[in-house]
Image (cartoon, rainbow, N blue to C red; front, side, top):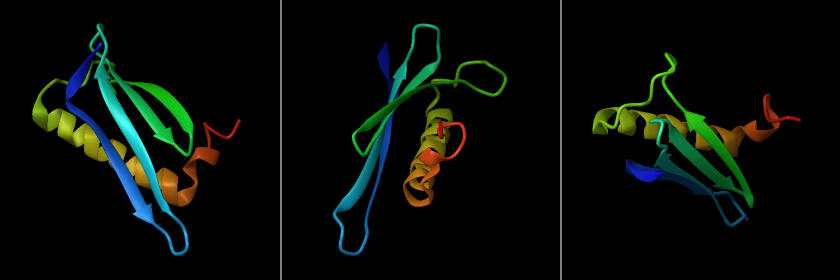
Length: 92
């Protein structure tokens, strides 16, 4: 595997009376073209394989990867603020 053009994103924010809360997502390109996403937050690590809805790999083009990174960063924020890690499919 090798790092993507956009190597990853992070999200952090501080809440009153608490330390900053931070989450990171790293992006790697697999040999089959898929993007492997590694998310770390609160001492946990999740790994995902990311492809387009069509099943095709996300293109290596800067615009496509930037859009993907923006979507992942928004999802990190949602997880951190809405406790989405306890929502399906992660509530097992």
